[in-house]
Length: 383
Ligand code: GLN
Image 1 (tube, rainbow, N blue to C red):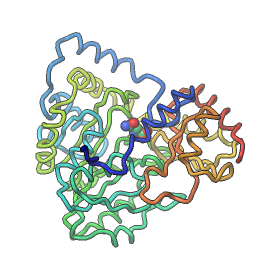
Image 2 (image 1 turned 120 degrees about the vertical axis):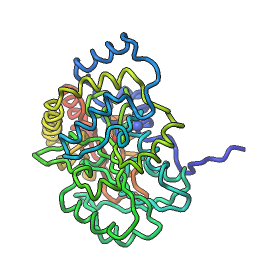
Image 3 (image 1 turned 45 degrees about the horizontal axis):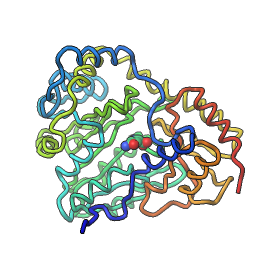
Image 4 (image 1 turned 180 degrees about the horizontal axis):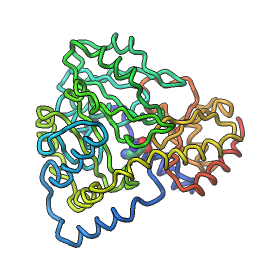
């Protein structure tokens, strides 16, 4: 008899909604991925390395050229100096990095704090390691953290706090005040941090991304996790990385070596080449997506959905309370079936489903896709 190791966990919502979009011929604004290609120069380098003998196992932590470029990048962006040999590991996507980081430090009975809506990878990783997930809600409509609640939840059993900025799915971005509050609540505890920063380059209206790497006192207890897929419009490449102080990275590698051993080789060389001369690309990515956010919000203005523009990520929440009182999973399914636009219901990211009626759209799409989707969404009638 098989026993489910993740009771109550079904297929991830990203797969569910993308499949539904396909089945109903709907525009897919659900799972987050661009419908356009990344830089040609980068793709050319992948082909080059495929053709020039870079097709065998990469070293466990990643090819040295890429680790060096990553170290140079975080020095440039976050004034953070890391040793490429002992503090950087390239992973097959940020998802594997999240799994390895949690597995490296969470023992049976340890408590891990996550903020709801929480990306759906976190809790299963905690559960598989025998950890206990403590959920703290972000407060609607601005998704702020009530730091008193964090203070009340922290105990000597708290091993790890999972942070995410820019935040998926709310599109909020941390402020200096959040950093200061975090610093205060963990003072005196032996707590580690996992900072999911896969949307590091995608923040808007002049808001600076506050990587935990900027703060040496916090960075010394943090696994900071990034994604090349989000940055280079190539989510299918599955290349991300983790930065952590050496003692944490030692434990991380202990796990990583038996999960994937290493990350695919030609893509690592290609990204290393591209990183040597692409600081401009990173600096322009926020504007590139801000333009899409603005367009999508503007196109949606005549609709009955209410949108408060995202501060970061390539996601936009929309309140459909004026249209329906259906739970968001039902509303999102009906939207896909009847109006041919797929979105993500955000209640699945909560332990205690929220009262508000909100779904998430991905605007990492061609303008034509966004126009067509907004037209269809403008036709949604109330029930
Ligand atoms: N991060 C993507 C999103 O939030 C989904 C990734 C995945 O499908 N595993 O939409």
